[in-house]
Image (cartoon, one colour):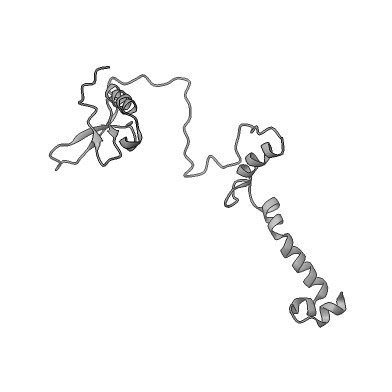
Length: 161
């Protein structure tokens, strides 16, 4: 092997340093596994991290796909947002909170609810689904985005419920 490394012309590392050259190529071949198992965190992988791959592998191997509660992420870090449940919820306000749409120069400012029905194409919904969404928006006093470039005026609509 030393003679072959000494006469070959492809890799000067093998020709000049046969043992270290072989060690280098061995470590280069093991690099992905070393990176994946010893350096990379469970949620850093691309395109899928180890946590996601485990979810796929467990049922395929016949292992229970149950995950314990908890996380390895730093939930105290800046920019990590989450909701905290409360055992003592606040009292329901008399009027739902709203935000004013339009500034002081606006001719017709509008107070919009904070919770609204998101955009969806009316062409993809049945007539009964659209009526149900309209009734719910009218009951809740919020807007429904039609997805067709406008808002349904469900707040002022009189819908027989």
